[in-house]
Length: 288
Image (cartoon, rainbow, N blue to C red; front, side, top):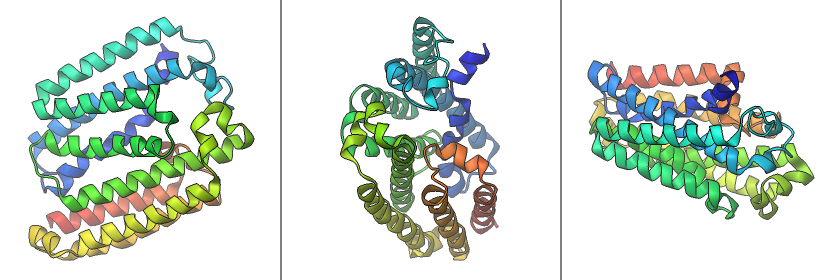
C-alpha cells in the first residue's frame, strides 16, 4: 500500500494550487461555496494527475531504471507490478473525468483536454524538441483555466500571459535540472535532451524570465487592474515576484536544482516564505 501511494506522487499535488489563482484574483477567495468547489476541482486534478503519473511510469519503466534517482520508483524497482499500475491508472482517470463533469461540464472538458495532452506527451510529444517544453507549460496553464472555469469566472488576459511565461520558466528549469544531473547520460534517459544544450536552454530561460517579470509588472500597474480592484496596491506584490524568480534562478544555476519544482518550493525556506508574503500582499491588495 505504501508503494502504491508513493507511485501516485502526492508531492506533485502541490502543482494543483494553481487552480486557486482564478478564485483569488476574481475576489471570491472568501466565498465559502466557490472555495469548496475549487478545492473539489483541485482534488479531481490530483486524481487525474496521479493516474497519468502511473501511466507515465509504466511507459518509462526501462528509461527510469537508468536514472540515478528514478530507478528507486516503485515501478522501476519492481515493487509494484505493471498490471496493478495499469488498472489503478485508468480507474483514477475515469473517476476524475466523471467527477469533473459533475462539478461543471466545461471543467470536465478542460480536464479531458488535459488528459489527452498529457497522454500525448507521455507517448510521443516528450520526444519533440521545444514542443515538449510547451506541453509541460500547458499542464500548468490548463490548471489555472480550470480553476476559473469551474466557478464560472472570467480569466484575465494578463493572468493568462503571466501563467504562460511562468510555466515556460518552470519547464525550462526542469529540463536544465535534468541535463545537469544526468550529464553525458541525459540523452540515454530522455532522447529529446540530445537536441538541447545548456547554452540553448539558458538563452530561452533569459527570454521567459524577462517576459514573466515584465508581464506581471504590466498586469499589476495596468489601468484595467486598478479599475477592477479599485486600488493600485497590487504593485507592492511586484517585489515578491521579482525576488521569487531571482531566488529560483539562484537555486537552478548555483545550487544545480530545478529538476523538481515541487521539491524546490518546499525545501527552500526563503522561497517558501516569499510565496507566503506574496499571497498575503495579493490578498491585502485585492480584498482590503
